[in-house]
Image 1 (cartoon, rainbow, N blue to C red):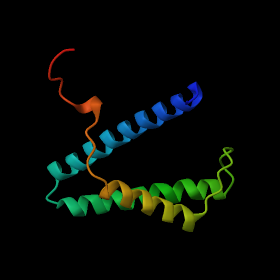
Image 2 (cartoon, rainbow, N blue to C red):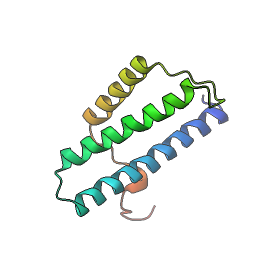
Image 3 (cartoon, rainbow, N blue to C red):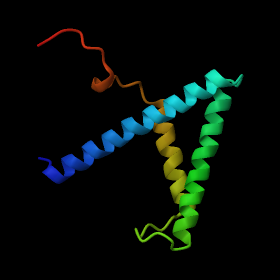
Length: 106
């Protein structure tokens, strides 16, 4: 059985995932609405921006400017991110309870 702390971490991660998913979808849709770019061009630009964020955060940690203790391993980190991206992109769509339309009452 999961302890309270583990359940809280899972809930925090799920909330973070939903927040990031929503923010990225808004940015994607806004880019499509305000430019003549094709979806893959916008997605590629988003991937470049994500890579830039990784580089900036890793650089900050390489310089010891953050006290959290993370030590970037660029090759391993990028392999992990690629694997995570591939898994998420290839997985079947998941209907999230939080986004489902209410159909009735119980």
